[in-house]
Length: 171
Image (cartoon, rainbow, N blue to C red; front, side, top):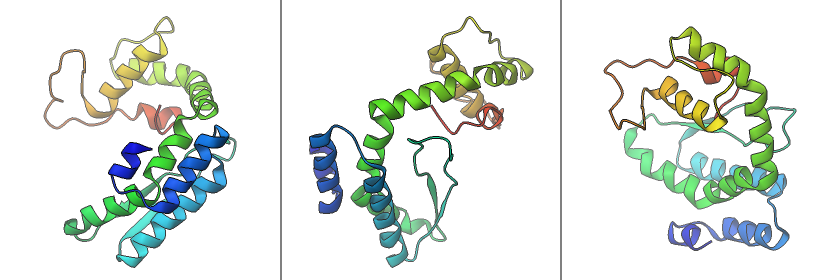
């Protein structure tokens, strides 16, 4: 809660966070209302956005959206809208235990496709690997960053598309 206050979270978001803390979970209705307030802020600033379709079979699927900036100078305004109205409640929704369990189960179901995609692209991966090890390989496959070596991604890196192939947006 302290970080949310310090980063400029609006009163409505702080109230939702307090309610979530008191009841022990974030309700989807609070998440939806917070994101809608973010959209209202973006609309008022003349900033476009696109909401992705939520997975209908996932109760704790996050509300994901992208901001379309015609003018890069509006980036701080867009950031302020998101941080002010929905960032913290979105994070709490996604990180609550039931949400993490659902995301972990989704990742577990996607493992065979992830492993196949990685090996098809020349990355050594197999069923004996832990989810944490596979996630490190996925980071590499998406952005070219090997966090164990600290080396920057190769020049002209292109994503292998293994997250898309597996039908997951993140982990």
